[in-house]
Length: 168
Image 1 (cartoon, rainbow, N blue to C red):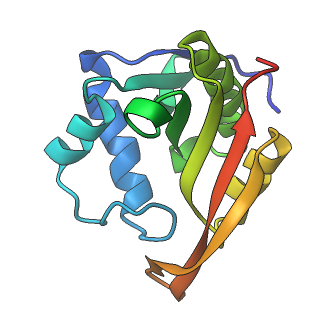
Image 2: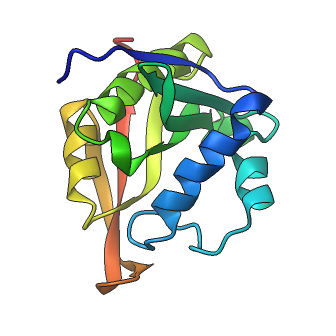
Image 3: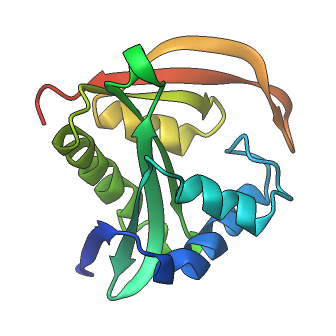
């Protein structure tokens, strides 16, 4: 962890370009997200800022370094479980941005009435993300074989991960 100051706040429309730049950087490699590498900017920003979504940005020394969004995992009778998507700019890795966003998201989800958080699609080969989520109390609930078309590794398994928010 560095001595740099990480701050997390709700995202605004003014953050859209910085958020898009992070999203584009992350999805273009085709190794961590289900979003196609050529997903259009408008589609991604509509997803990030969709009605019912709660987008956030993490800044490091005033510069947007990461972003996440939480939303209902399912409508109706499954709406008490949050889902999230997290992305950090490569220029800001190793500063604890992902961990800070993860901790913040757990509290933000609980504050919005969610009782648990579930990730439906964590790529098994994304070992940094898997380790981070496990360190924040998530458990692997299931492994789905060959569910992801990894750009370098071919068909790859994904995990469904879950944790309660009772302690938040």
